[in-house]
Every structure is written in C-alpha cells, then in structure tokens.
Image (cartoon, rainbow, N blue to C red; front, side):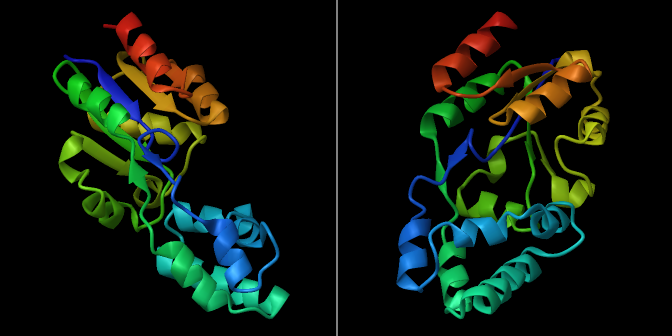
Length: 198
C-alpha cells in the first residue's frame, strides 16, 4: 500500500499575502490588530473550527464584538475581510501534484465549514485524494485524535503517513503519534523532506 502524505492548507499551500487587514482596520476605524485579535481568540475560533458553530455565525460574532468594543463599523469591516479566499502557492501545488503520482495525498486543515467552498474558489477540489476538515471531524489539530481519525480514514498506520504543517505544535503532535512530520518553512525544505522518504 502506498504511503500517504497529509498536508496542511493555510501557511503551506494557501497564503494570505494579499489580505490587507491593517488597511481594513484603518478604513473602518478599528485599532490596529483588533480584527485579528477578536477573530482568532480561542474561545471564539475553536467552536468554529470544530463544527460547533458555523463560519457565518463566527464572522457575525466577530463583527458584533468589534462594534461593541470600538463603536466602529464592525459588520462592514468583517464583510470586506471575509471576501478573499487567499492565494495558492503554485510551487507547493506542483509538489502536491508530483506526490500524487507516488503517494496518496490528503489535505488536513483546521477550518470552518467554509473550507470546501474555498477549495472550489481556489480550483483545488480535484488536487487531493481526500480532504479532512476539523469542522467536519469535530476536533482540531493539535489534538491527537485528529491524526488517529485521519490515518484510520486513509487506511494507513501512522508510520505509513507523512505530515506537513506550518505549525510546530501540530508537527510535534503528529510526530508523537508516529507520523513522519515536517515543519513547513519553504518549498525547498518540503522537497528535501519528501525526497528523504521517497
């Protein structure tokens, strides 16, 4: 049975280089850093990425909190902030495509229920053999249960899986379960890692 490569989306295959959060904050009268601080506060984000609330409800909550705290146009700011879907790193995508000729390739993302629509918008739907979203699994990285479930769904033992993520915490959690894990920082580093296990 072929090995499986399990790869993260954000920070690896998708970047947010075009996201102008600071400009949005200025435009709508928000303090610098406030949008990110509210949106990614764990008590707000975790329910969204584990499927306990919807993406729409999460974003509505962010808008409401921004307006409550700062008396600003929170709803308009969040609407503009939410519109982009990021940008695909074509170099990483080329690696993914090459890997699919020798390995099963699965996407594993801590994501809201918007993930699949984002993949369609990014033309990535057909680029993986399987897609796993934390919102659908009900548990998010770095919880070990994520890796247990994904390996089982792929029909692979952990030692038959390679894992790539831009979070050192997620990488450590995967490695602790026996996956061969790589902390993504560059395409060259990713290629070297994959070559070592070819």
